[in-house]
Structure formats: C-alpha cells, structure tokens
Length: 149
Image (cartoon, rainbow, N blue to C red; front, side):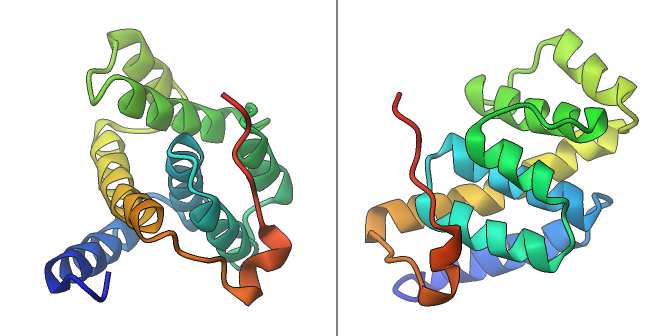
C-alpha cells in the first residue's frame, strides 16, 4: 500500500470509519475474517486471527470462520451469512437474507456498516494477493491455507 499513497489513504480512512461503526469489536472481526475467507487471503486470515484473539473474540468463532463453517452464535452467524451473501451477489441481497439478518437483532444501518468492512478488507485482501505479501513472523502461529475449491 505504501507504493500507492491514494490506496494507503483510502484504506486508512475506511478502516477508521469501520472502527467507528455500531458493530462491536467481535462483529467487526467476523466481517473482516469472513471477507478474508471469501477472498482466500492467507495473510489476512492469519493477521485477523491474531487480532481477534487480542480483542477477546471467542476462539470458536474464529475457528469456525477459518474452517468455513457456521458460527454457533446465531447472531454472529447471521452476520457471517450476510457478508457472504453480499459478496456472492455483488450487493444484491434477497429480501429473505436481509430479513434473517434483521431478525437476529441487527438494524438496517448495520447492513451499511458491513459494507464499510467489506470495502476495507477487500482493499487489503487484493493488495496482499497482488503484492504476494509474506506472512509476518508474529502471525506464523496463525497461518492458514485456503481450502480446495
């Protein structure tokens, strides 16, 4: 990102905005990890697994996302599913998908907060893909390889 001041500025601004969203630290990590899983970004899965631990995100939540499985917590699972639906359909949500998200305890504004997280992590995931970013030593214990497609 340092090679593109525009990208670095955009990423920093979007990251700061996402931190100000109404989503909790755990919910923000669910979004960031889910986007990284979807984009198969081994660097970001490792980094956010470490960050999630620092932010006291339950281990079972992080493990489920890393395995591509459902999260046991119904509200967080609704959030994970919304992220995947938004990515799969390029923002074209089915009414039922939005209804499930809202029924889990979220509000309409949270859908848009999720978009901010998707934008943030997409910039980072794609940057790592293009640059071939090597995994930092501090994240090695959280290394991850995407499952076969």
